[in-house]
Length: 242
Picture 1 (tube, rainbow, N blue to C red):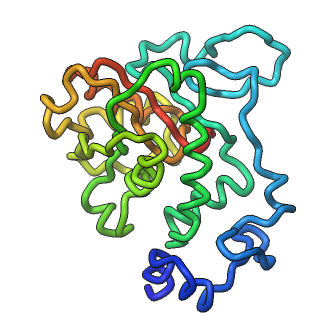
Picture 2 (cartoon, rainbow, N blue to C red; picture 1 turned 180 degrees about the vertical axis):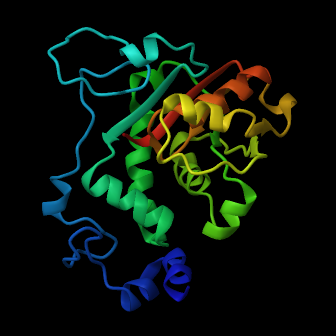
Picture 3 (tube, rainbow, N blue to C red; picture 1 turned 60 degrees about the horizontal axis):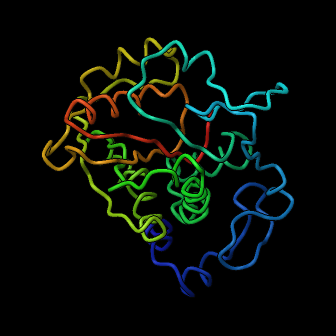
């Protein structure tokens, strides 16, 4: 509990009590840095060719823009889902450390990776009105003590120069989705979210924020209810693509 509290404070006190080290290999690092140069080489960026809809990387030799088969066969409610990194190695370790193990000091590195999505042509092509974090159910948020999507959204808001709207509420606590396939995840999430104030989102171009895009079931259900409430468009940004 003390370490978690201190990690939110920042500054010299944290540096004194918790000397900087690599969150992956534990080697010493400069103050404010939690990833050493060696482990940083294991961070895998998503590069073309990749699906224009969900950013899934493709190992082939395609040179033109394309939509993957998973997206092509689905009627999705978000315009695109953008991630700059593959959810593996240090990226996955940082996300898990932040979400599940109270390593809140990792939020700045995660936010920096997330902020890179703002430079993607799919984002710069159309202005947007607000960042909307994917919500947690109140029971889970009480257990975790924070919503990782909201923390990250608020950290990148100054860079985006857009407000953060808690436009969504999770109204049903769903079982963990770890062992579910895509269709089971979609069924699990049906009716789990609602829009707090439909008038706020009506006609607005929104950017949904989450940590990792896996099957896309969560952001698809969030996008569906936002569009049903009248949102003009929904794009999704995440740190990583699983």
